Image 1 (cartoon, helix red, strand yellow):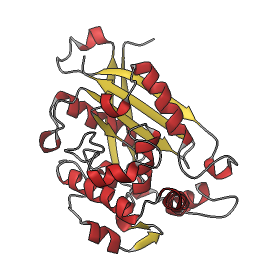
Image 2 (cartoon, helix red, strand yellow):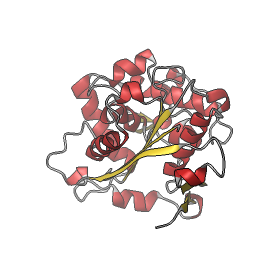
Image 3 (cartoon, one colour):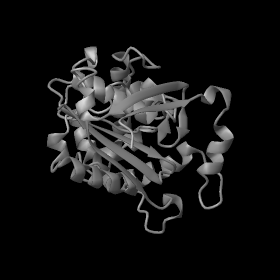
Length: 281
């Protein structure tokens, strides 16, 4: 066992490209598909089932673009309107350009140590209250997949809440960073993480529950959408943002009185999910 560990995540897609591998990985039942093409199937099913629409996804994009303008290291610092999001070039219905996160170069790092050792390094450290990782079958090949949820997120969230003693995540989590490769992915995270009931995300999006000044701010630095998505670094970047929020050092995007923060990251179609909860001592 080690007392202190350095965690580093990085990616440099600018030098390798992503189009070919992405199509191969996200093919549906032997047919080629882009990530946007696959996730858009889920969006269409969700819309039909729960009555959400492109306007709800656009509001998520507008929120994240706003938050990104407040983060010094974000890649896209540009406000947009719902009308701009709805009128943007179509990528794969219902996803327009502003519904999709762009991959980027980047790196992030964190140092983990024992609580008693952390006190000797700084006064404003945060505690890791839960770390959970869950796997599930590839949803594209899972006959029980209903196109309305990501099972790994539900599994990982239950584990993390049990570890941290969280009974009501909507009330007990002060700020969250979630995986938003597409705006639909963020919408599903609201429900899969228990921030609202299944099918109810649209009402909370419209009322501003997850806005920076809302009841439970989500993606306070702009998320993958505007901060950028260096795949290997994204998960650690989320934890860094939560760390700054709990320190009270998030500047113009600071969430008032934040003491407990959650980060959520997924991989694949997705087949994997990690959830981390950090808190003030």
